[in-house]
Every structure is written in structure tokens, then in C-alpha cells.
Amino acid sequence: MNELRIRHLGQVDFTRTWERMRQFTTTRQADTEDELWLLQHEAVFTLGQAGRPEHVHHVGAIPLVATDRGGQVTYHAPGQWVAYPLLDLRRRKLHVRQLVDLLEDVLIATLNDFAVHGERRAHAPGIYVQGRKIASLGLRIRQGCSYHGLALNVAMDMQPWQGIDPCGMSGLAMTSLQIETRRQDSAVLMDEALDRLQHHFEKALCYNPPLPCADIPS
Image (tube, rainbow, N blue to C red; front, top):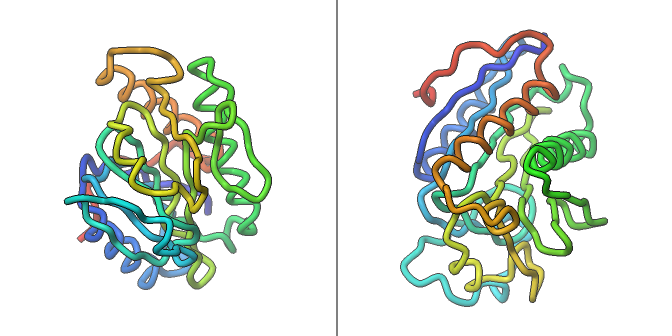
């Protein structure tokens, strides 16, 4: 059973979405369909389980939320596509390392569609463009199932990144698809990036056509 239900959630609050991801994962059954949630978050800094407070310098009025994903501190905001693959890894016969590789492959393929060359970095999950980080990964595995996922910077305000050491890496430069392509049509670029991101997820995770999209489950 490798079907995938794809949900487009729009712009949503991080904490509410996180609670729904945990609820979905805790209550899913052996025959529950895997889901992919595609969304943007309202501005928020999140601190992973390995997060250290010295990597948070100035967040201003933007909320800082301690969460249960892996990794350090990161930033979400409109203009960034977030993808949460809620997968039964045992059913798909995926190890965690294979899932990380799959997510990075999806990101690299998406960037390639815009003639941007994305690269991996050893021991630092995510995707980089000439040393600048353009996409972040953070996962949680519970009962053999995944939640949380990836974030791709597309056309967002980059200034808040300066208030943290992204992913706990002091001096790490952050970038976006808009910066790398020098495109000014932010809305069109966001739509195109979502289309390509979903396309590559479908190729990586679907053996059948994706099921109809729907709102976030209650």
C-alpha cells in the first residue's frame, strides 16, 4: 500500500499543525494512507530536540517554539514551502537514512527545474547552493512513522534568519530560490516551486496517482 493523500493547507499556524501531525501519527492504523502536507507557516522560529539556546540571538516579536523534531533552530515564514511527509516507514520499507536521502533528492530535483544546482553536505542535512543553505530538514519518527519534514526557501524575507545560527551553524549564509534565480515575480515563482516540489514527491512516493487534496484533518 503506497498510495499518498496530498493536502494543500495554505498558510497555517505552526503549533496547531504540529499538534495535528502528532495526533495523526499516534492514531494511525496499519492501513492508514500516507499523507503529504504542503503548506506555508506564519512566521515562527522552531527549536529542535538538539537545539541550544546560544544559537538563538534575536527573535524580536516572532514566536520561538521548542518542538520534537530532530535538529537545531530554524525559521519558517510565508514565502517558504514546507512539506510534511507522514509516512509509514515500515510499510514502505524505508530506513530513516533512506528517507533523508529521498527528501534531499526531491529538493535537488526541484531546484534543478530552475537551473539551480543543489548539493548535499556531509553530516549537515539539508540542501546547499555554493555553501549557502536553501532548504532544511528535520524529522521525528514515532511507532515507525515519520512526521515533520522539509522547508524550501523560495521568496521569503531573509532578514529574520540573521537572528539565529541556522541549524546551529554560526556564520551559515541562507539563500532562497528567488535570490538564486534573480526573479522578481514572487507569486508566480511560489506557484511554480510548489508544482515542481509536488511533482517530485509524487514520483518518489506514489505508485498510484495522488488521491484528492483536502483540508487538514480535524
